[in-house]
Image 1 (spheres, rainbow, N blue to C red):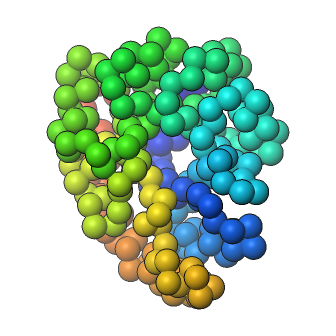
Image 2 (cartoon, one colour):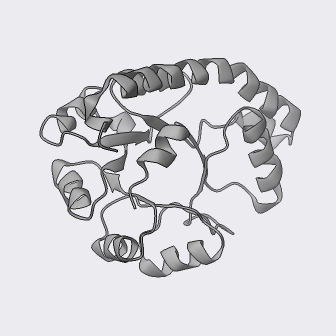
Length: 210
């Protein structure tokens, strides 16, 4: 099941990767207070059983049993694609190359996670959309509050933040009020970028058939 509706509704993905178990609830609540209700829990971290890094069917099943509402992959594992497509499971496949994009489209996934987005030229999304019209991309990897607008301007409909999701010093000190305040200050910029994407989507005829 393609994730366009989910991703376009929540253009900011908060990625919980290697967050200590005892900090998880406070960490997530601080992000929610700042306006990030859309979360990925990376499966390759300790104590993690969430939605991301679903590189095997077994991980997919475990994440879904734990309550995950969608799955993400860092690449194009065909067995995971087949499992999700056959069971109508929401999946955001990870892509980097035109071959990855073509593989995702074969299974019906037009909305994809470009990873690592920060390592590619900003025009790379539009380069991919040339031959693969109607495709949509979330940028993950190398995204920070300082460059978030660059990815939206480049044509992405969403971004994911991981290491730059929270101020590290405040997290280390368990200062969740400071984390929430940081998010509140950042929310205006994020919302501005959301409006940019909404306007682009409304003007883009490739979305009319959705």
